Length: 397
Image (cartoon, rainbow, N blue to C red; front, top):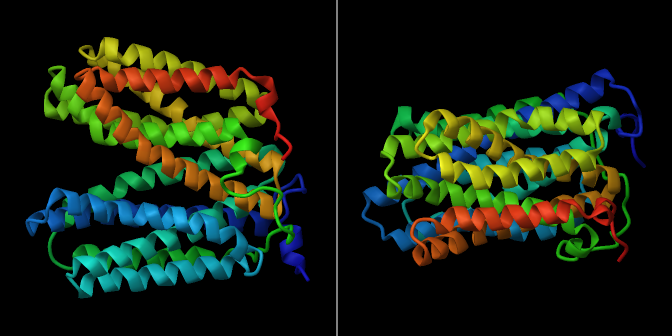
């Protein structure tokens, strides 16, 4: 039997309550702190292995362990959410993360690290899927866009803090491990102020994680494109900048302005989705994304034009994920919403795998202009799909 507090937190209510506001704030705070930990350990472990003379292929393999864990976890978590209470799952995930970080600190075995990072991805899937499903279900419908925009903004900013912390501690000693464990303990504190949560539907969903593609192809392609662009740019945009004659610092600043845009613009995009027709907002993001993909390579030698264009381009691109979450909240509830969020993780991961591979090959074939060419092509596909009105409602399976 669902308890009274859980029932009061459902998003069918139009108004905020104190418990609902505290829960939303607690969930966003928890994931924001977790985002700092993620962004700290990814470069930290890579730098440690580089100091030990580890082959680049092995460093890359370790970096892939966590995403593989996320992919595996995305298939498992929706079923677990039908059996276990949400806050308990989050506290379990946070506790496991502390133990895993301690394990990283106590051993230097590459094989053990690989296993730990894989399980770190699994627990990450718990934290993300439970939090996102919970937030979508309890956010008042009239403010859901703003809430999800705030969530994605906070998360994006948190990803910038980890590398900053690492720049202060350095990639040696135990300080990063200690900071990571303390951060995860801090992440558990807001959960004490959250309510309790069980999925609003305990029956089996009509579709699976992969089958979600046929139910909501626009949402799938939106999150796939975001993963494709983010990881491709993270690895190859500085290379592209240097190859067209920019200094290394200027090439790196391209990523900075893109990241800031991706963070800052999510709240305005979420607000617009609450006020205007969601389809119009998605199409607007698609227009900005396609226009930006075409224009930024043409103004790359004019920083005062390049920086704001990258800001708007990356922000509108990240908006695909925010709007896709909003539409998922409108279309699905309970176990189907949990499955949809799991599918987001899987297809984002697929895009993250494909982005650097396809863009790297394109740069080898057409050096260095293959990167912007591929990004224009992906942006064009999303733009065309965004114009199809029948994609703005779920398809029957």
